[in-house]
Length: 117
Image (cartoon, rainbow, N blue to C red; front, side, top):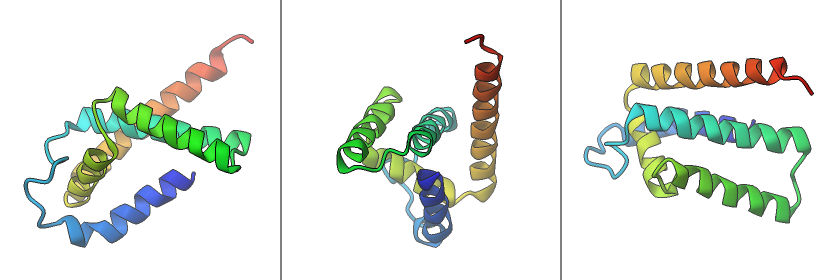
């Protein structure tokens, strides 16, 4: 939840700042990569919310998982943040990316509910 709030704050506050940043290191990140990375980051945030990870050690572990999730998609924090800035400069594209993230999260949620435990 916190990551989601921070991402949207970055969207709202960063849009005017990122509007003229052509050639940023994340400008060429495909939308499909951003969808996959953002989905993973939202799942990490849901894990923190679900299990109440709030101690310094737990938060450090989650930060490490965030770095690992980004690396899994060929990104580092700098490139991911630059790509997010590039998305904020294009509100329609950002909406499409987040619509795809929501579809993926809903699909994963449905699949989990259908599993036998």
